[in-house]
Image 1 (cartoon, rainbow, N blue to C red):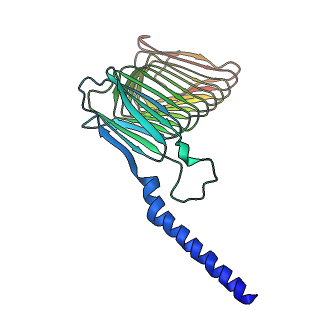
Image 2: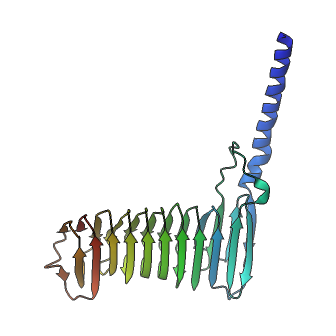
Image 3: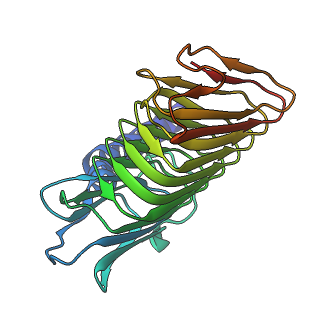
Amino acid sequence: MKKTIITGLVIFIGFFIAGTLVWFVHDKGVYKKLKYNKELTSKNLNSLNIDSNSSDIVIKKGKQFRVKYYGDNDIKVFPEKNGINIKERRAKNRGYSFNVNPFNSSKSIIYITIPEKGLNKLEIDAEMGNVRLDDLKINEGSIHKGGENVYINQSELKNFNIEGDSSDIFIENSLTSNIKSKTHLGNVIVSNSKVKDSVFICDRGAPKFTDMDSESDLKASSRHRSITMSYKDKPKNTLLKLHPGTGEIKVKNKAFQDGKVGKSKNIVEIYTVKKDIIIK
């Protein structure tokens, strides 16, 4: 009996060690490998359409138009007119078993570099995964998200729509014009940026604007939270239109006299239902 137990234990340990070696020797390379890597050489490429299942998406300025994919899903990259379409789907051979493999983090990455001239149009439809735009110029586009966040840094965006359910949206060090942003549960955080002719709507979350350009022009609303806006420098040529419902208006920035600075070239229009509106 004792010999049988020892034999069984030895066999178990042997299989455990073998499985561990597979994880470290084989699966580590499988789940961390670069599955797709291609430079797109056409000089007429000016649009990008991404339909993603769950990957993080990183798009930033680079020397060439290149697409890389790290992960184990199926990905297709194909040209259409003057643009590129990228589609990611769950690989059929992955199955749906419980994941105990330490190297299969189920977090793949679509990594794209764009030349300095930027894009005429960018469209992203992604249920999950973070979206990061860094140092880009985009004339038109949209981002539709279910969950996880959107990060925009050091970019120039025009005519852009961003919609998310539980996503937080972060915009920093950027110049935006005609941006329309709408979230249900998420927040919108805009910092050290110049915003012109843009709208930020939150349901249960709230827009927050910090260190804003002195001539920002925007509309914002939240049904359930207070909204705060602060300027990096003294505001210029700005008219405040603040509608706090049953909340309070708190204008702490002394540059404003009777809700105005200089001419009414820029308008900051903010709405809440029961919460406060604070201008610093």
